[in-house]
Amino acid sequence: MTTLIVLIIVLLSVASTPLTLKKLIDQSNRRNMIKNRKYIDVFKQEEGVRAFFTTKNGAVQGTANGTLYDNEEVFQELGLNDAFKVWPRQVHGTHIEIIREEDVQRLKEQQAIEAEQPEVEETLPEDTETHVEDMPRNGVILPATDGVLTDARNVLLTSVHADCLPVYLYDEKHGVIGLVHAGWRGAVAGIVPQAIRRMINVLGAGRDDIRVYIGPGISKCCFEVGSEVAEQFLLEWGSSFAEPVEAPKQNKRADALELPDPEEEPEQRYMLDLKAAVKHQVMNMGIPEENIEISRHCTCCEPEQFCSYRREGQTYMRMGAGICLI
Ligand SMILES: [Zn+2]
Image (cartoon, rainbow, N blue to C red; front, side, top):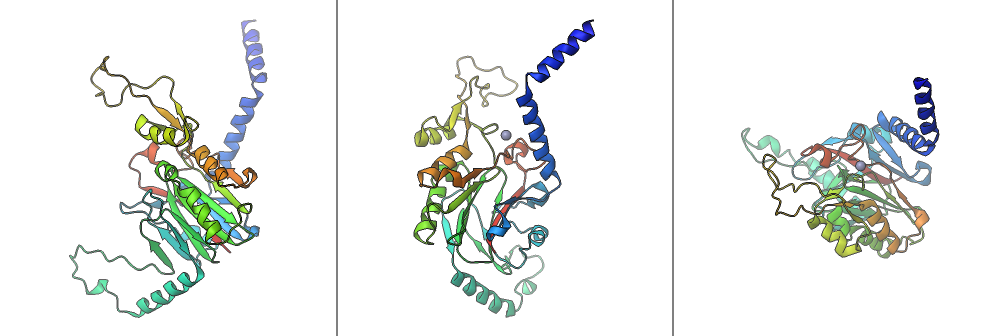
């Protein structure tokens, strides 16, 4: 009898939460779909563009002086091996570069000349500490850059990520693309609106024609910050994208072995919604809402799929983002 009552209660509770169940099934389907893949497609190939965001299967080893995304296997799978690669060294700043067809031609000519020069490295003594960085073949490294725009075909814009957002920009009608690396610093400093402004003013993109994909990155569920960071959001947007955490955790400055000082006020902490803040900026630039898509993936709480700086600490794996007019 007791068993029967328990069974009825269980059945009733399952029946009364169909939404939660559906959500769980959706979530698990979504995870399975990309679990074994190296990348997620962004936009559609038939629209004249190839754009991707890699999972951890397509990630690259990070380096201290700015990682470059150079996973040949992924380029091969995407048919982008022959594209001219653009590698920005990201610094969480707001500098945006524009690459035109003539820049690509000039760089290719330069590289052809340098390829004929004798190899410098061979002449260095073996114990030398000097590292000569190879001029990349069929590509260019841009120092201190967090956003790149182009209207040239077969030019692959890349960026690396481990929580910060990739923001993809695409105007099919005018043949203009952009890729922005936006963490909270870059977002507050307005790198995304700046990229859109220059896409329109310099490359002739149409405000109504630009599509925006705000890719996988750390989401509100995981982006807990202290008041110093939250203040930047509060100053810029009020409380719209920085929600106070209701029960602040014990002050992190207190030593774990010591009892918290009752005199010391625990620091107020906040959950940031970086994706929503960027969407708000994009809409403020006059881009129609139906042109904007936000990835539901959170890099921090989907460890099977993604690398996360916040979750893994000093991890040096970085996922790649890329977009190329084909
Ligand atoms: Zn999360």
